[in-house]
Amino acid sequence: MLFSLYIKNFALIQELTVEFNPGLTIITGETGAGKSILVGALSLVLGERASSDLVRSGTTKAVIEAVLKEVHSEKIESLLQAANIDTAPELILRRELSTGGQSRCFINDTPCTAALLKRAGEELIDLHGQHEHQLLLHADTHETLLDDFALTTAEVIAYKNIRSSLQGLQQQLRTLNKEAAAIRDKKEIIDFQLKELNSIGLKSGEEASIETEITLLENAETLFTLSSTLNDLLYDGEHSLYSSITAALHTLEKLAAIDKRFEIHIEETRNTKSIVDELSRFTRSYTSCIDFNPEKLESLRERQLMLLRLCKKYGRTHPELLDLKNELEAKNALEENLEEEVSRIEQEITLQKTELSLHAVRLSNKRKNAASHLEKAIQEQLAELGIPNATFIVSITHKEHPKGDITIDGTSFIAFPNGYDGVEFLISTNPGEKPRPLVKVASGGEISRIMLAMKSALAESAKLPILIFDEIDSGISGRVAGAVGKSLRKLSRLHQIIAITHLPQIAAMADLHLSVKKSVQQERSMTEVTPLDHDNRLLAIASLISGQQISASSLTLAAELMAAARE
Image: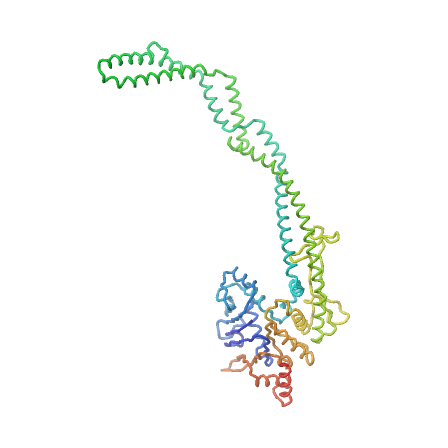
């Protein structure tokens, strides 16, 4: 509920705090006293466009602050969380406007944008002044209101879940088709490259192996000469190392037989002889295996050149060519797998569309059944409010599309987020007139009563915000005024209502009666707001009946109206 409204240096208001009660608050006052200023201040704190001309002359800044209590709204909580604004038991909306045209907005003392303030305000307070700002005139709210009346929460959730699943599958299919198309576009290139790479029989480590073999073949003569020379030095030569060591060993053995100190060197000399013998055998074997093969050398050089050209062609190293070959093989395999996966998902999408269509029809039927009851309820309310010949229609339409996700009896329709229905409220207030969208209804007085009738019919089911009526009594009087007052009072038992009125029948229904007066102090006009007690309420209502000259009969009638309101 709106608990209080603080206004400082705004238009004719120097500074005041207005406190509100649950139920029905009525605001009265003479024309020009400043009732519309209160509504204007509320509009600003709800994020409407501001003008520096509204700052009270002689001051530099206007401040408007609205305090709301018992705000239970998931949308508000998510808005605050997204903006990193702390939640609190009270919700405080504040707007500051300077003479320089600068505007600052706050929620719970945290700076925010005017757009965020407006989004929060629209969720909390429905201010009925100029009809283009009225919540129920927006067709995009009609479906939600009808669903609240029809109690379709479970059906809507089920539909949304299937639609979400379907959209996920469709996204998967788009991704797979895109990947498959990309592979198909490059199919010829992939096949050519794979054929070329397979034809040369790439082997891991081949590049280094070829280079080593070429080096050996190119140096075969040198290797033969050097290894032969080494073998002569080690074993086959006249004065070979093996012969010298053998002679040295015999001499050591003779010395050791005489002097034991030579014995420690005998084993070392024997080891050396074994090493020389082993090296000699390896050298002889190596020399015998040296390959003098010019044809093989030429073949290896051609192979090496071919690999170098291939690496240059693809801009990759030899190991990377092997990786490329594996990648191309994987893409070919992927295309086959993709075709199978695409087929599987297409089948799943077909099943999901069938399921979605069933839920869409079930939801639509429930809405249609509720729509007829809502039409009747609103027409009854309109009749009580002085529009007896009104025709109210809940229009439910569907949009055909050849690629729609919902199919009914062979016809495809677009699947909207909350079903395949397009819901809009239409009305005709005079016999013979074709029902038209609410936003096109011209009469301001009729609009206020239409809104009241709709809200009364939807009151128990719809999550309506705080309701503020600025023009509720426009164009009505007498019996209709009494009906409007009773309707407001009844509706206020479910939603907090604040209404500005000039009619005593409506004012008498108030739970809280605020009087707006303008006075002149120190040669400056000032607006003041005063809550009225019982006796002052009696006088205020009587003045609405007879004007400033209050008569005994007007006092009696005012008392009767107040007594009737308590019944």
